[in-house]
Length: 338
Image 1: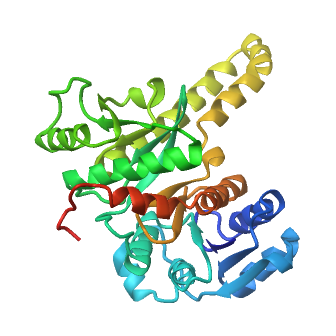
Image 2: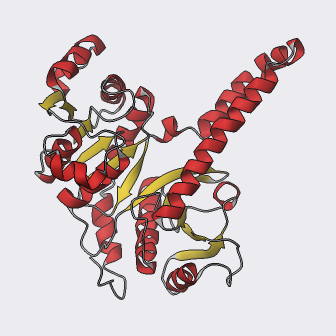
Image 3: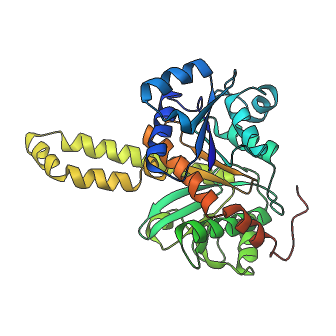
């Protein structure tokens, strides 16, 4: 198994990407080689200090970086020698089976869709972001790849998300919900009502409209929405989690008595935070492209990068893309939008 790492992607690149690669090689024996793409001299210095197994890594030089504030599609077209472009080319050529990037999300999506192209029958790729809930993991699809989706795109997201949940999480009949402004069947916009009709008539285990609170409290495996809505939901959840953790910490340290209490509950508090931490989930899979593309959080730690590599590994091992192609081909019709 060969995976390309966008070593220059992310807020703490390349250090955390190299440290994450080191952890992955120690914990994931199925990986044959990791390709670290970026500034060769800089990567070599960090590889030497991190003590990586040099038999299991290959450094691929790139002279450009796509910055977080750059226009994604423009950057991919102009910066042919960027780390994200070259890493994606490694997958396109077949030298690698997956790419992991904590860099510019839009650039990762653009590189994958432009260079790898979509799986046969898939009109638009969608980001599947894992959301922890009371019953395991629910995938929010799309979390930002396609902001101007059409109803049929969401049906495809539901199919791909269901395959992901079934093949990777072992759910025999994944429960699919549609993000709306109410759980009643008649709720929603003209757009979501059309999506509702498509999902209801599909062979999927569609449970109906769901609201934001259902992501965490209801038994759901996949929730679909357009990328504009999904990205707002995802970032709002991340911000809320950070704010609540900060508020709790501040309140626990206000008095001496509370500080003693904080010591007692600290293990439970850390465990609760870990359940919702992006570090544990690693990254979000871009569903619908040929090859495997995992998009990690821009502020990823070494542990998060290691787990993003694990996500890529699981997708390869479970032959996720062939399963997606099979299920997509079962749909009665396809959109004419390509």
